Image (cartoon, rainbow over all chains, first blue to last red; front, side, top):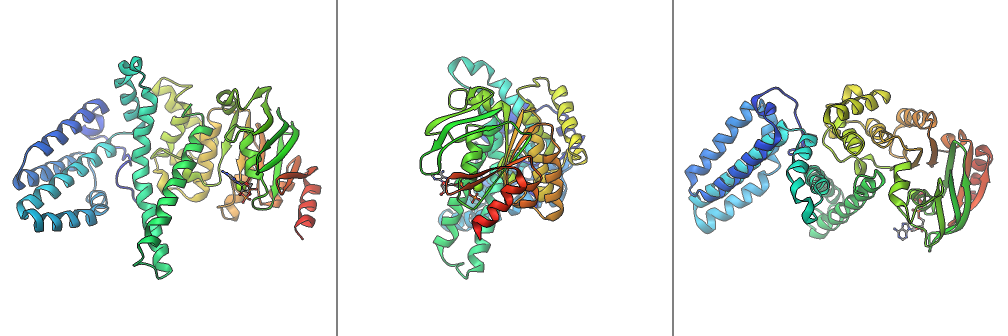
Length: 201
Length: 220
Ligand SMILES: Nc1ncnc2c1ncn2[C@@H]1O[C@H](COP(=O)(O)OP(=O)(O)OP(=O)(O)O)[C@@H](O)[C@H]1O
Ligand SMILES: [Mg+2]
């Protein structure tokens, strides 16, 4: 199974060779611009722009589609809801913006090794050490989040299948209770494992 | 050297005194008997509610961090333990403290992977590994920091026969001291000493083959 965010695809493209710092800053600026500029046309433009970026990064159409498919259900719901409540232009803007941000984040994680990202975050937060910020911890939390996303989607799919196998696909409880329990259990196990590896000390 | 001095955990393990000096120690017993509790006491993941646990004279409650540096721990499910996207990155995560320089860290990680026959998979996504490869990687990430003792809690329970053998060979062949919790009695019988845990207490402690026999009669 391919995971959407958080999988580094080694390569030699311009984006691969750029250091993580500029890419992180660019992602941040891009997010701000996407959220500030309104209108459906700009949203479509942002999506087109990120698709060009993905091509420059050498990502295959398949991996881009795989990343988007994970969010297809959410996107469809958002689109329908907004079209109904606020009309089509607004719906396209919301879903287009979201898609562009997901694509941009996918490009970042695909072209950047997480350890490099970690190093950059740790270095950037260095000056805040005096204020009680522990850069290693923040960096670790960041990479754990990247890793937890696909893991949680996986657990959700498994839980849904288990509910279906018991003929309980309509039961909200059968679909959510085990998922919540397993996400918490996995988080606890991961905490134990990090503790045992001496990483969180 | 691991030493339990009247160490107990309320409701899970009776006060127990032990000295573990053998190179390979197996821990066997029924579900819920207290094996994992005993294993987790050894690196301070669980702290004793009475008595003390000492590793090379260090108290797990007072010097937890130093103890965990000496005692590595491998879990049943490697998914909980592997936190980075790719194989090499997960090993590098273990090495962040000892190798500040990126280049030397990468080289050290590759050397570790080579030792476990995983070098070819260095750039592979952790998602794309088989269960056996994942468990070997989990063991590699723990041994990367060179602990003196390795505690493994049912490391082969999720594996098929071939991978059980492979992981078993790796573990039994380690130069580190090994404390192996397992339901695989064949593997247990190959250790130098075995403890049978039953209803929260050590029911037998001695040669591994005898321990396995004792466990069999205990269950029947
Ligand atoms: N976190 C916990 N809090 C309270 N009680 C616990 C906890 N974990 C386990 N126990 C209880 O302690 C006892 C011993 O559990 P332990 O996990 O050590 O057994 P085990 O021998 O490892 O079993 P298994 O073979 O199923 O892994 C059990 O009765 C269990 O219910
Ligand atoms: Mg157990």
